[in-house]
Amino acid sequence: MTSTSDAYPGDPAVKSALRLAVIFASVKLLLTFGLTLYTQKIGYSYFRDEFYYIACGRHLAWGYVDHGPVVAVQARLGELLFGDSLFAIRIFSAIAGAIMVFLGGLVAWALGGRRSAQALAMLGLICCPQYIGADGFLSMNSFEPMFWTFCILALVLMQNGRPERFWWPMLGIVSGIGILNKPSMPMFLVALLLGLLCTPERRVLFSRWALIGILLMLIIPLPYVAWQYGNHWPMAEFLHNGTVHHKNVTLGPLAFFLAQFANMQPVNALLWVTGVIALLRSKSIPRGRWLGLAFIFFFAMAFLSHAKDYYLAPVYPAFFAAGAIAWEHRFAASRLVQRSSIFAFPVFEALLVVTTAIVLPMASPVLKPQTWVRYTTALHLPHNNTERAATGPLPQFFADRFGWQQEASIVIAGYRSLTPEQQQHVCIFGNNYGEAGSIDFFNRLQHADLPPAISGHNTYYLWGSHHCDPNISIAVIGDTPEEIGQKYSSVMVLGHLNSPYAMPYEHKNVYLLRNRRADAQFLWSDEKHYD
Image (cartoon, rainbow, N blue to C red; front, top):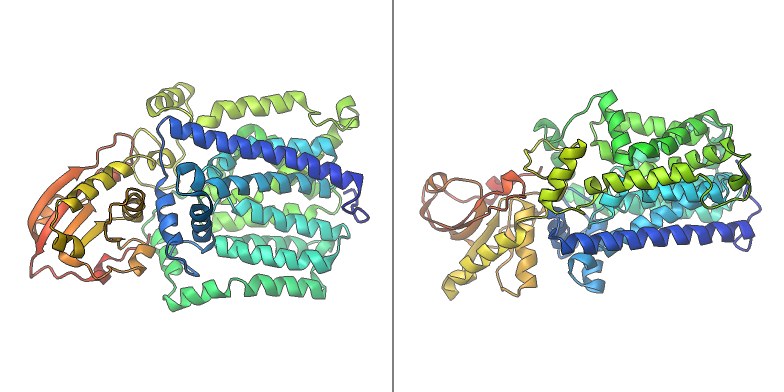
């Protein structure tokens, strides 16, 4: 590892690395913005989870049943600063992805890579389907790689002699916020700790500044822990239900490993696999074994905990950087490498761009649905769903962008058919948070003045029934009229959700229900389902 211990912000090498990182981060940002605008133009709408996160942003708290508070703050700030258009709510995710690319380039620099390695690492990150998809919608997943890559950069810089009094507190703050973003962060931090303890680089852990950093990463999430405790540990119940109900696809060790190639883009394996090996061998990157070991530990923990295969995605930027450095060392005699050319590996880099263009429709909905089906069928591209729910012609990540406005329109029309008195007391019920969240979103967007939607799904359950009257309800549920007739004396079908591209379980009726039967008592606790 080339030392950066005597580098400072005025150092030409630092300035060069920063300028290059800004250029690639800007390319990433513009690419994400362009994809968002284009996919909206060809008919793809809001993603199901985005409605939920926006609803959470309007109910700000220190915790939620199935996620931390950062994504809710992200959603609320996005609405306040930019508006609630499809483009506006995704701006922060796009920025987070650009920052991830920026930090990936700096990790390559900090590990000793020159401009050729820095550029190759960042190009690989831009050409990664997993990041293209995650950064293209409002989610917590877009922020994870940014937080994790910053932590690795801070540790590498301290090993290179950068001041611990600055970087340890920064690492602690970012880690603490990262835990508030998604509870997978502690597993990553444990993997880093184990990697450090197994190598001489453990010395970075033994200082008062390290203690301060660790205290910060423990203290910052305490309000979230307190919220979980005060609400009877809903996250634990959510995770338990997911396990016992076999919600997610469980992969064997080989399938779990091979899934990483698809997620990161197969050609990118020449970067990250090379990077892990280079770190473990510790030749082209001296003092880097701890980071290679951290990857092994994290991979093992993720597999043993039956995590979804894409949960490993945030850890990869540093290994792209390490792999790029290995490439730079391997071709050190090349004229382009010796000149520190930005594109020193033209064949490899061209292959990256071309293959990314080929698989781009798997990461971002750049093709209209029918075209997408024909394209993926012709190329035999796999539909990698991480949950067991049956899908239609589109994978869930794309299918969950259809049908929501149709649903809201039916509900709004049903509400307007009620008398003013009925409108004051009616329950607007969605079977899951996507249905309830979309009703709330389009209600505000169209100024329809509906009461808040209710649902027993995840955090919507904690927000309660808003004291609505169950004797008059508009409900989006999958039950048949005969089944509902056992609870209500009057059952009217207002409409049917029939988008051909939506998930099959969203093909439901919208009912107007009146007069709940005396022997079918409504208990809010019966509606609770965390999954």
